[in-house]
Image 1 (tube, helix red, strand yellow):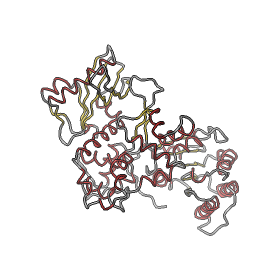
Image 2 (cartoon, one colour):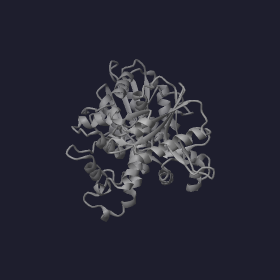
Image 3 (cartoon, one colour):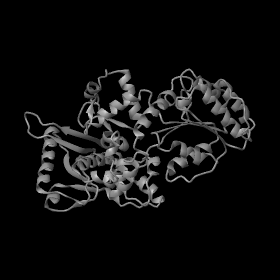
Length: 484
């Protein structure tokens, strides 16, 4: 197999190589959002470390076709691609594979890669039972064998393998959650492709594509961020024009219900409570709803959180996947109206009030995901902190409501009330905005009668322009350019 250079993923590569070089049998489960690069990582990191056997599950593929693929993989690895008769059961398939593995030199590592395991292990296929048997009976006793299984259906991987209660219980020796690139990793990835975007264009690209390598690979060096977004998202043949429905259909059995839930959550910028969400999607609290939420959470589409100061049972939900937010806000409304797609459609939307509203909200999500980096810039790495958000809705006793973007409740006697601003230029606080900030601080202190010192933290995309208002109000500011 031809090896391709992997950009980034240094920690994951180092960990995988260490596992492969171990002196015992290993069972590695890798999961993560679709398109995040699981298959690419395993193939290009492990294929040249020993004998490499790979089989890929077929979406909705009948057992017969899965076993035919297995036979082809067996022939390619051991029989110089000579045609062999497919087995009719997984137990026979694994026994045949085991026979060939026993012939491999004792000095050689054996990497068995089962990709898209949830598609292989369909109900009544006998796959998991056969895998359980062969692992416990043979493979776990052979220190040469390193079994790697991958799956994009993260909740399936967690329920049926990582937290399995049957024969494979506690058999997985290593678990790896492959996450999207951070903003820093995205900048590095693009630089390796010769794309050196300034901070603003980098953030705008991340707002749409997130840190998904497959999406970032579509970015062209010759185009600005806006031009790339237009080509990738707003052309009928653009990779991301109809990607959303493909992802959901491939990941979830109940994809229409999951789609409805995500669509409803996306309408609520500050999150929606569990009770309100149940009411709006017309579902009952219980197993089915919990399963849908678990699937969406483990696959990286939503975040479950409890607002600051509220009971732990008071769950709220937010959509946090960048492409999902972008698709539902900008592509979904016009996907059936291709006549609206003028040559530079995205350019007509940039800098509109709707664009600024979306950009501000999405930048907040990016800040939440990079909170550890913000803590590092604030030199709070070694201070215990409780993190949260809160929203105060105006009521009869008060004319004012307030949304606090970020709260950092520090163990050293300080609470930082954070304000997050996405702008093209260094942000400047004027008199009107200063009044809003004072109002937020007053509302917070009125609702949370704390003895801790209150500090105002300002997080900006392009820095803060100092003036009398900023000098008076802002205790600490973080420029996102310092994080990248």
